[in-house]
Length: 239
Image (cartoon, rainbow, N blue to C red; front, side):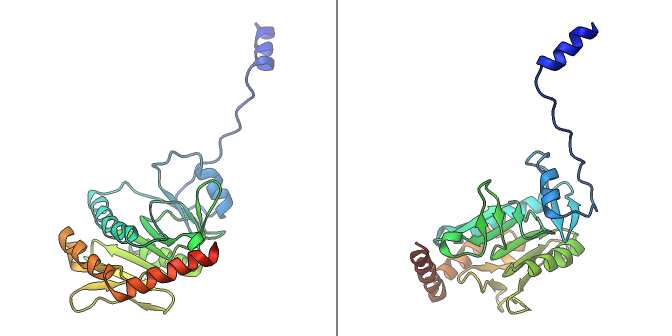
């Protein structure tokens, strides 16, 4: 029997590599080690590295999913009408040696349109997207402090947080160092993506019709037309 076991070990498949230590909430890691361990998990598991600290996401509430869908619908329509952009949902994004978040949404200018992030051979985003977006329930410390600081430090241009508990939008312009405030009608206007107009009250009221009406107005604006020209010129310069 002993000889048979020995033969089996010699002729069988090579031993599997040892399983890496699991990621735990609060671990302090560098991005390469975090990424190496995170690859063990199935795609639906959401774990982030923010400022060198591991955050394991809680189960997603219905409201979070609902507002993420509404926001992605508006931003997705803007992306469709604007060449050279890419909207991503829950995409792993490598921002630096201490940062690998997985934002609810991000809107980026593609690298061949001279955007500031790029795509890797294994299909991840590296570098800061122009706009990061999060739906926040009660995680004020994570979304409005830790992630905000992390994204600003990495070079993200704008950051939008939809806080469901406060029923409020927080939109930060890191380039100017000032928040983006709504118009009297409650419309927020991105400064890095001209024509991306989001009606805050309509979003919180789940008024999809009003949301689409406002973003269409933004897309018809002169600012958006000028932005499209700049993107096309950047593409020609890159090619």
